Image (cartoon, rainbow over all chains, first blue to last red; front, side, top):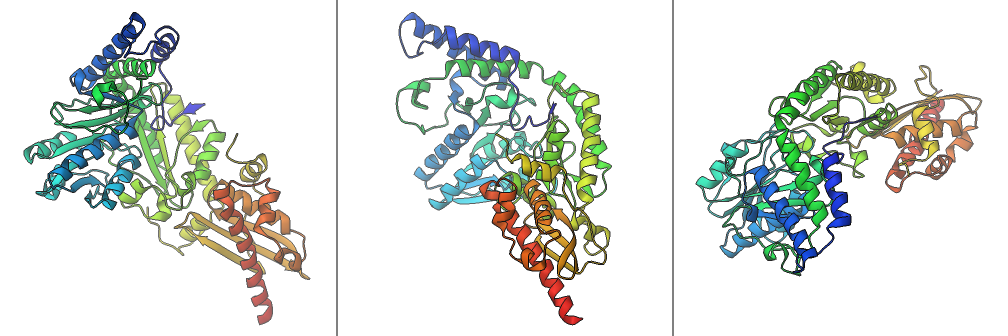
Length: 394
Length: 126
């Protein structure tokens, strides 16, 4: 079995599992309690905060633990909007291919009277700092742009965008769920005001993530209750989950160079191999791309059947096809980079992990070739393309 | 719990009656690539009996399985009986489809209806 869906979730690292399980049984105190049991948990929690902060170049008091990336995105955006509204600024800049945790939150704000500018991400899946600068207005209260895209893996010029935001005194948030633990992220160097991340994307547990908020940026809590996280996120802290996430992050960030050295050649080997399939195309820039991501469109076939047949061959992957999402529209990310519906339905995302071998890579390429050819063999769309009744798009 | 029933997976993995009938008496194509599903049915009809049927499908697992099952259900049957085929019968024969995939069985029914309509109109011309 080859697990090639690490952008969906990752296997927990052995060290993260060990941290989690030992804390579950041994350190069950409530960190808000003053007796030893509680204070022990509090120590674990604060050590995790220091480790997480270190991993992204932040200060410990700038980290708020959340239930994951979606909550962090919601809190960051809604807070910046509330602050903006108070000063009569109701314009937000983002991109068309953000994660739904961002896009749906922006839609909600739109209904409340905010104006949202979604920047074009071009055919290569990259936005430029210049676009951001041109879109900034007097009433812009927030720029929120993802660090790396979850479907096509393209890495945005975050540092330059952050610079532009600083220059114009606009708060800058980045959804870095697919970047943290995969590429080097430093909130100071990258001029980031707020950043969201999620534990299970870098071999930590599910249901835990964090929001970085630069000192001096106001943040409002989404959940009312106790005074945990300095009143910015109520609810008894998930101490074992948080500490386990910190273990995983420390490990991942400590191994970024090795990770890149291992994955880049394998990623490019797979890209090269799959590119040999006629009428296929890589989605997203080939260079400014996380080391784990491979995403293709194939003309004349549909993605779900491709995934099911790959599953039969022992390969777990994902697709932006409508059929895998339960809606009629294919991936908004693929549409945003200009893929038409017909082609976007036939997409495949492989997100490889460090356990992959060259043999696995070659097996993936061989399997994808076989399955695409097989499905095209009885596709009426492919027949029309081959017979010249329709024009090839790719 | 898998996404699809064993029957669906069987018809998806080993689709029956895949292909083209060059001298078909009726051909029907429904759906569109924009929505992600296209089915094409070819019928060979002698004395009002469907003697052969083939299909081509661009679509998801349940679309391929629905096409395959629909062809099995009408093969060797009189035209009058094939006309009665409902999407429900296709879905039931597959031991059910997830709710949001029921449209695949509808498409299979419509593809057969369309092919039968083509057959009728060709017959009228003769």
